[in-house]
Image (cartoon, rainbow, N blue to C red; front, side, top):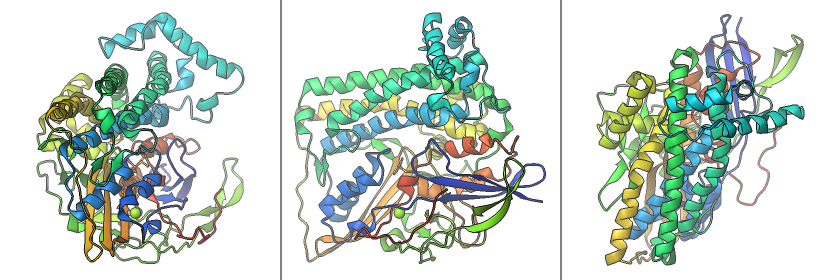
Length: 568
Ligand code: NFE
Ligand code: MG
């Protein structure tokens, strides 16, 4: 008999995500459904607006990747109007994106995903002196060292427990048999969890130096950037460099060694090793560091074949909605995308609750529509995007910046390259992506400083001809993977606007052929140790760093309720 396990909501993500899996008698997942139960959005609201405002509206899609949609909205319009922003603007935007990644990835590892790997309760029984010594196994200059420092961390968390509650550490599956760090290793990582709360503020300040504020910076404009005063101020540039170094130092001395530590310890855990999910990988070039070069390159790998990296043909990108709550099922290219809602809800189902009693639940209709996330496809195929795709594609292409960092990591952990294609690999690749960025990002800074000496141009002039029709797009890489925005302009206003977002690719539902999206595919075949504590499901889903706020963005322009539904 198959059983249905429902996890709703998945916490420590942005937005609302429900996952349902069917398991067989051996507790092995035979089918999976990822459902976004929150409906919001901003694509429809853009119709009829001035294209110069697009960036400001779409920025509100998400406050996590707070800069991604802003940049995408500005650059899609620039692409449509044929504007090439000056080099100073290109490099400033690149450094702001560097700042976003330096913020977003460590916060994901420690605050959102870390506790899937780190058992906080176990850390309380660690010997701080021993932990202080063990920290040196993973880096020559650990942050988590010193008996007093680690003891203080332990006492701080123990104080929560003493009061009878674990505060932010409540409601987890502590003691679960798939945790693999020793108490001392757990304490090391826990101390970095707390330190990351401080360091993420510095990373946010980096963005604000050029962006005026964070979240939601506001110094980008169609044509360029407006932060000329900051760019011409040696003090502001110096401040950026100092903060950059502080955050990079944390990444080198905490994030990197912690992932090496986890990589070694979890090399025995089946549930994080054999679950690549969709083996079609998709990434896009990003981080200009001078007029001609980017840190990462674009590319596609199909069916896990690393021997062949294909070029991207953007005409092959579509979104369909056979299994999503929209009217128009058929695959449409984003220039022609539609989002007319068609909410069909859940079905009711007889279930057994965790006390063994018969109960009734709402459940996903396994034959019908089940999510607000559309199904993006490339050449009709689902694609996995994000740091795993970015690192693996760039490694396969022989990008020297990536090869150097990956080879070093494999040497330190003893893991084979094939381990990259897994949940453990997804989490490691996010750290490795951050490492490549901090190792190369200062090149963009140097190029900017050098260029400012001879050229102070920050904005390109342009006109919008009301008698002309334009269309253009932005495609780039943001923390969760490939982001694209597609705009058509007619009569001087926006005619259609579509955002195809990393989490839309990864949280995609099945399509007309029944082919699963990447989250779903990653779950199938998973063996769950204890059905009442499905930590393995959460760990796999978290490794993608879901952002459902980004993935779903539709609303009625008049603010009317289009449909009502209940969330448990
Ligand atoms: Ni809301 Fe986002 C990123 C974008 S979504 S976080 O990164 O774009 O997947
Ligand atoms: Mg969209």
